[in-house]
Amino acid sequence: MGCFNPEKSDLDLIVVVNEPMNDDTKRRFMDMVVELNKEGPAKGIEMSIVTKNVCKPFVYPTPFELHFSVAHIGWYTDNPDDYIQKMKGTDKDLAAHFTIIGKRGKSLCGQPIEDVFEAIPKADYMDSIWDDIAEAQEDILDNTMYITLNLARVLAYKKEGLILSKKEGGEWALNDVPGEYHPLISAAMSEYAGANVVSYDYDLAKSYAKYMLNQIQN
Image (cartoon, rainbow, N blue to C red; front, top):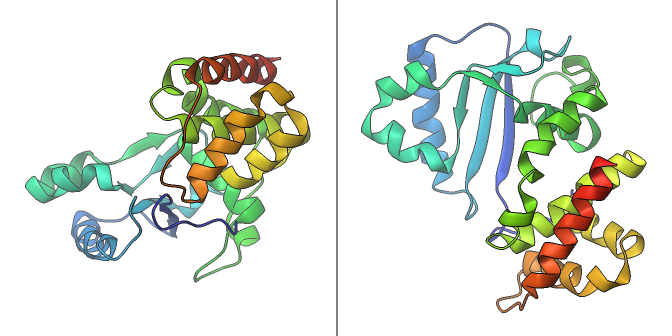
């Protein structure tokens, strides 16, 4: 999306396989990813493996074969067998990843995106991203930059069907959201771009979160 920042961004990867993976293959794959993660950006790699038959036709909530993120390194390192046995199931968040893949994704190897994925129903995408913003009025105080920009990109999708990066979401909001919230949005964009010192008005942040949630729900 043209706004990667190695200090603020992670790498989101989806691996699509033809058939379910056995435990030995999962173990070898995890060992590789843990090593690769050491060379990744500050927030690391987030990766899910899914089978092709849940991508087209799309299945929601989406089953996955294996998942990795930096939050799970300790679990895998301490007890890899337990991790391999339990790290599978369904994940609503995959509807959001698949939507972005369809609109803005890049195929690193294998078949073209349009041959593997079908369009994700709008209702599934909205349900997927709602969990990430439902508690925005509380969460915005602890993670102001992320919630501010994420609310903007969700509202841009709800209003205009746009799939935007956080940076693009902030730019969109500066043209669509009331001016009273522009200082907050601009501060969040500055932090996202790498500014070391950013000051937030938390009363304004709570008001912004309430306004944006109302707009999204309406």
